Length: 254
Image 1 (cartoon, rainbow, N blue to C red):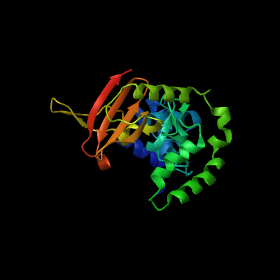
Image 2 (cartoon, rainbow, N blue to C red):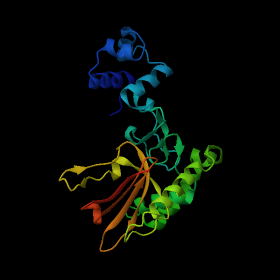
Image 3 (tube, rainbow, N blue to C red):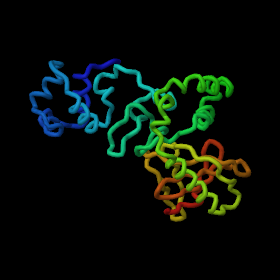
Image 4 (cartoon, rainbow, N blue to C red):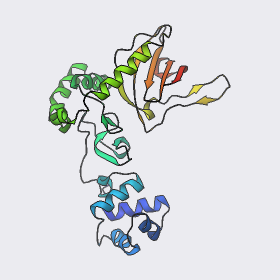
């Protein structure tokens, strides 16, 4: 159901448990201004929309009743608020998903690398691998990132960092683990496995909302290795098909 801005603000305010006066104080307006928003008499200006977006952790598009159907301008994924990337200061970036933009940096600089990752998820979901690859090759060049990516690149810093992580994973010498050749952007909430520790407790090590670099590697006897890292740590685990029976092999501060 499409909602108007007045309905969105009222609903979000109630969910947050705020009175009109309390909301007004947080975004530096009067209670009467909030009242006029909720009756539809007026709408917040651009700067106030930014403050409301941060306060309620939703996009400005959502505050305005979702008039635009947003997609990631790097991979083409339809964007809901929970999928949107964040700037380093926490402001929502409505142009990109968490996988393609994280901590102020773009995570993909080679279109073929991105296509390889996307095809794995699309193949079998109504697409053959060939159909998925053809679709992505036709669609990606029309997105804003790939039109301008030469101007948006970070001088190779992200790729250099990924190569450094790869070298560190391969230097661990973990028995049976294949060499790491490539790392992809991974959002914590989709790879945050719960590992049993010798003490008997189960522990998760990732932030569901953070973006990491990692990959899955084929192991032996139907097991897989998972490698995940960022500026702070390296994590290596093994698990079975469909991510069953996860086992933590290593968690190392960098």
